[in-house]
Length: 279
Length: 203
Image (cartoon, rainbow over all chains, first blue to last red):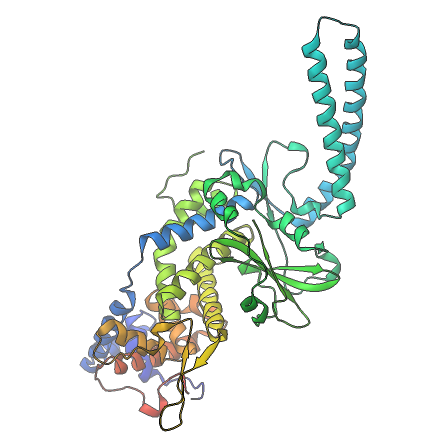
């Protein structure tokens, strides 16, 4: 059937039923018993269409899954903490500035702790203090090492939770339109990197998230590998345009038997090449 | 700050964008039933609707930071629900099918493995199955505007925005879709499209 618009008289009853008519059309409708009978039929059809049973468990599960997704975006386990939504690019720049500042702070902390340890070494009675100093030195060293490891791993810092234990929590607005330039995309070299960035991580502390995380993490399924995907990142659906193993891809998130997964879809083939569980 | 559960969508959206989990929960609960109903009528199957509605809920959460309020929240979420439903239909079509052994006439019949209900004969099984069949036989171009109008409660301009077509096209598709549905459900009135004009999936 061709896509031809119906003449106004053929749409009048339907449009009048929807209050999408002009005053003249309304007057014409009001004088026609036939059109009004047609309107009554449409009202009956609408009532049937709306008569849908919604299983409570299905609803609760869907909302729980959505809240887990919300938690995994950055508001993990701390609903009282105010969060803010920031665009990715400014956050990345700020994080880069923060990184240099944090390196300086970590170095100063290590020096300070060593100094304290030297002073306290002379105090034979303060074993507790020495113990605390050792722990503090260890924490400071770990913080510096973690920062260094992030650098060497090439993990996109803009996609991680707030740096340096910042008091607020941030929901990252992942701006990844289909036409995003290649050099603006997050870059990944392994499934682990993707899971690190987009996985729930500490969200497992949440009971629902824990249930998801405890599920067996399946490898890429045969079905997923044969899926043909729509080959465009849809921001409304949360798609991410990225570079994976040197290739432009779309990362498409979905739930698979209560397990959150991401399909990796190379733009060259539009076919799901890999499915990565996000525990 | 505590956001009242009877706050309007915009207030709840802003609070949720600011990290308020309770506001998000309220928002999702407020809209879930209609999202599910839209998914149910687009996909025509309970399990597919559940999957699509859950995908839609997650997509709404993931996209919430990008929702700028230029369209209504309802328009935005029903667009997502429609896309999730269509994705579910596409996935369903890609699921493997197997052929039954050839019958005595040498012909074969195929069924969808993942959808054991697909072969149900609907004759005499009641209005709900009749409606499902009527919807299934209606082409997507007509089924979706009717569902968005009658189930999602979107106006013509909002449907036009969701589907990316002119308002006149929405008006025409809804009229034709409704007429075809009414006829399939056994309603008889004048002014219906000719049978060969009905917007079926085969057309």
